[in-house]
Image: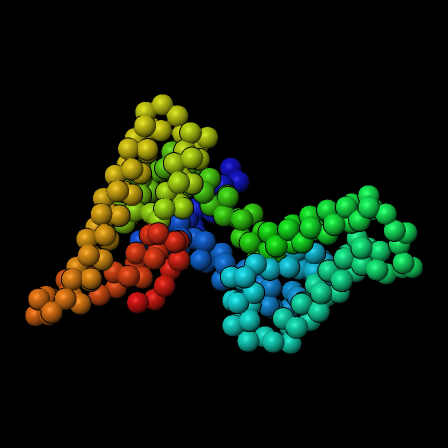
Length: 241
């Protein structure tokens, strides 16, 4: 089965721990996608063609910039800008003689430009790379849950999930599970999510209390890293404390 090819990274993501094992999976995919894009692959014609066409979202252009391969990123963005300029020139007629005036042509041109830019704003080479594999990782979670008791124990022992990935697992469950196993999965998923959201929320409350002079001499308990753990739960971002 194709999903079984991804059992190792999925198991490793649950073994790492943290507030959302699915975030661990996505972060690893993101790191690999950034390294691939900024490695020798950016010189390959098929990769350059896709990066030129799709561009990058705000998050991933920041990560690419931090990669420090400034020449590689410059070459990638030069090709992307060349593509965008060429496409916009075609849409507006700016690459040829002045177009014939007319209100209908102007409306059509505006619609084409707006549609093109909106599509460009929603596209990202890194996101597409991640999503192609991430969907198979999600399917692998359900495959392992169906097939392996050892994974079911690992699933029940995790520290829950962030909002986004809780929702994805809840939505996808009926596509992969049925009968009693589906009922058990949803029940366990709900408990894991709610119990651990409450745990982190209590830690965050204690973190806030520690800024009150009345609690100055009280121990920090488990609250010192409550804020980055909360950000993981609410926004699917893994931050260092």
